[in-house]
Every structure is written in C-alpha cells, then in structure tokens.
Image 1 (cartoon, rainbow, N blue to C red):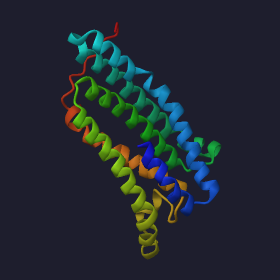
Image 2 (spheres, helix red, strand yellow):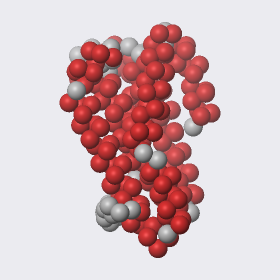
Image 3 (cartoon, rainbow, N blue to C red):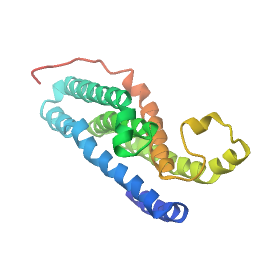
Length: 203
C-alpha cells in the first residue's frame, strides 16, 4: 500500500496545485491521528487476549468489534450532525468531513476484522482483501482524475456534482479512499453476518 501511495504522488503533483495537494495531506494526517483514538488499541488488544485465551477468542473478538463499531457510529453521527459548523471552522466542505468520518469508521471496523483473519491464520484471504482494497483505490483515483472531468464537461447538470467538484481537486483523493473503504467493508459482509455478538464488560 505504501509503494502504491508513493507512485500516486506524481499523478497528484502533476494534476493538482500545491495548496490543493497540501489540503489532502492535512486530512490524511487527521485520519492517522484520529484512527488511533477510534481503534483504542483494540486490534492489538484482541490479538493479545485471543492468543492468551484461545478458548475465549470469539468472545474477545466480539467485545472488541462491538466497542470499535459503536465508537465509530457515534463518531460518524456527531460528524454528520456538526458537519456544517465544522466546515465553517476548518474550511472543508461538509461532505468531505462526512467522507473522512466514514473512512475513519470503516477503517477502524475493518482493522479489527483484518486482525481476526491474522489470528485465524488465513493469510490468503487477508492478502486478497488487502489487495482488492489497494487496487480499488488506484482504480477510483484513475476514474476520478481522468474520466470524471470529461464526463462533467458533457454533463454539467449531473447530480454527482452535489458530492464532488467538477474539476480535479484534493477532494478526489479523499473520495477515492472513501470508495475503497466502502469496497473493503462490503467484502467483509460474509464475515460480519456470521459474528455472534456478545459483550463482556469484565473483559
């Protein structure tokens, strides 16, 4: 993923003005910091306690999953509710703040799910899902930066303009990450529907 991000830099720097690319970097910094808060170290905690108490692994996973999912939903709800006010303070469009909150929430949830795959010794599924997420992010970047501006020229009244600008912008980078996170979360649906939710307060 880091190598791919490295090779995306020439695309961004060729298409975007310096200040626009700087805004994307700023949002990515916020994401990196806030994800630590939303995860609460529960992915590491799950790995530690599941290995220590293998007979209770599912209960450990369920407790971590419930906590992180609940915190992510609360964070998203607060962001949506205060998006207009936050936009006035930060200078970012309200929908970009909502995309960012969804990125944080979905990434936090999938981090727990990816950790569970590691614990279950399922490297092929782990690698496949990671690769699809990375590949989808590249694909969405290419579509957004090269195809979408052409589409908007011929469809200036498109409903999509309610959710993104008509020209290349740092918002396209955030949108590409947002869409890849949705893809990753969707790929985990088979695992999610099999989870037996059980909260253990003491644990």
